[in-house]
Amino acid sequence: MAEAIGVSHRAYHSYEKGKRGIPVEALVKLHSRYEVDVAWLLLGIKSIRAGHDFDALKEIEASLDQYLVSAGIKIRSEKRGAIVARWYESHVKGREVTDDEVHTWIEFARE
Image (cartoon, rainbow, N blue to C red; front, side, top):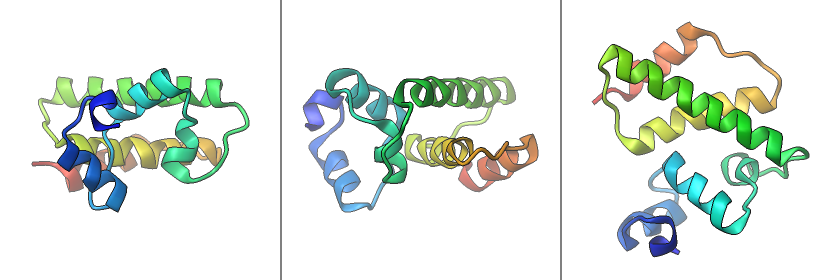
């Protein structure tokens, strides 16, 4: 599985043990290759509209990346994934995330 999603065996083992968050890139590969429900991976629930939710996940990820690049901020992949997961969870629950919340999450995740 590690090879299939392009990560080291050690990293994949850390994901399985819950010691490290899985990067969004790996989630995208899992979804593309195995049609895995990303909402289930992130939140432990079965998504009713997985296609729509996956589009929202990609939009959240792109928005975060655009902000990070424009602000010159670097964060580790697993911390980036944690921010995306938190943002996505809010989306699934129907709660809008403010810019201030995202900026706070980023400050906690900065290298």
